[in-house]
Length: 132
Image (tube, rainbow, N blue to C red; front, top):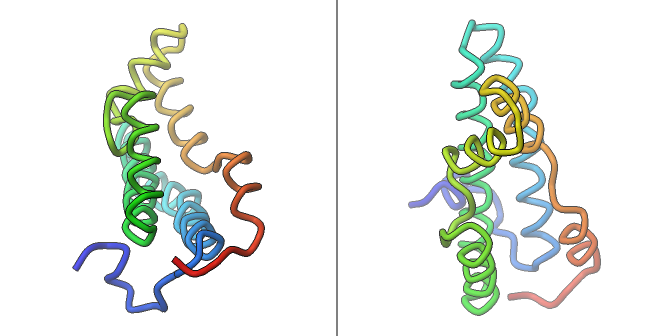
């Protein structure tokens, strides 16, 4: 059983429900980060945890989607990131450093950006749609 299905909650069946599920997963990142920070976790470990939550949400949401739509998103990620399932942690760090950020700033950027969803995609899925 995968992470998306492990909770036992009702499986989202429309793109709107899937997007809401995805956003709910992302919403837990700030609390998780605060907990890790309070426990003394390094900035790098906190960034890795934030990336992992976001990545698992991305993969999980696609498991709920229809085959065609999931394939289209994977193709988009492949052309954008060279990977079917979005950017790796190392890719994000590398891109941030390439833009002139320090390693610590790169980790902060990953933590912060992991908490934001793509507004254009949110707008697309804000409207109710047919069951998948």
